[in-house]
Image (tube, rainbow, N blue to C red; front, side):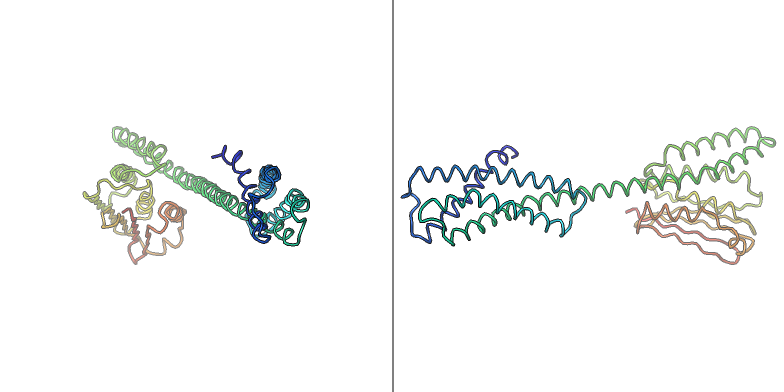
Amino acid sequence: MKFFRTWFFPPLYGLMVYFTLRLLADSASGARFWERSRVLNFAEIGCSMIMGYLVIRVFDRLFRWFDARWQFEISYRRIARELGYLFIVNQVIQNLVLTPFAALTDNGLQWADVIDINTIPLLYALIYYGILRSNHFLQSYIASRIQLEKIMNDQLQTELKFLRAQYHPHFLFNALNAIYFQIDKDVEGAKDTVEKFSQLLRYQLYDQHQAVTIGREIEYLENFIALARIRTSTKLQLDVFFDTRLNGERVYPLLFQPLVENGFKYIGGDYLLKISLEKQEKGIYFRVENSVPGPVHFKKNKGIGLENLKRRLELLYPGKHLLKTTIQHDSFLAELTLITG
């Protein structure tokens, strides 16, 4: 295709311009093309083919100059400027090549010849510009959109990594404290806690960059709950339910953990904590309810956990999630619905 456009298209372009002008001139004068001198015809055809090479080469150089000068601009103003340059260049070349032939052959230069020479080649130039540049502008638009989406995706990934990293310091602090207090009372239990802690840490560090199966997330939650129970009051009444119908669903990791951590952090009153993860028709429903001493406790303690979770949900499940928190007289309820179907 490139070979054809480089070597065959320019002379064809020149011939189209020439034969269109010849047809109009012969139709007006009643002359017959094949009755003219063959030498004159071949001379005109040869010059027209050379003109085609010249016009296409100059146009292509102009287009490259346009692209270098207005690389990041696609607007009506740019198109108007390009058409202005195209008009000037086309008129100069066509008049330099075609006007002498009209003046020195047949019945000399007539007003009809001047009009034809200044309009017909211009129409072909505009058609060539429209086809070539519309394709170029479309490709540039697609490339810019892809680049913009890549930049936005990189920014989102950077923000997600930052949001994920905010969990780690708080998680490490609580886990190490739990192990510290357990060592004096139960060495074997502390060893088991260290093993669970290592599994949790491995999951957070290495398995959170893409969606995982719901089974892996449940396993993580079970280890996290076991670790969190160590520092909780013996009065804790824990009710955990993981729906066995959950099987092949895939979710982004560490979205349920902040709600569980929040439940352990603010539990009080009757020390009742209910955690459930259930399958719904179009997704997954997660619920954490913990008893509290009173609603005032929550108004005074606004951490980054829930706000962090809300932002991650907006990035990972735009328009496909519902996070609802309800403060009652003696309990705090957090509900998260993810549409995964």
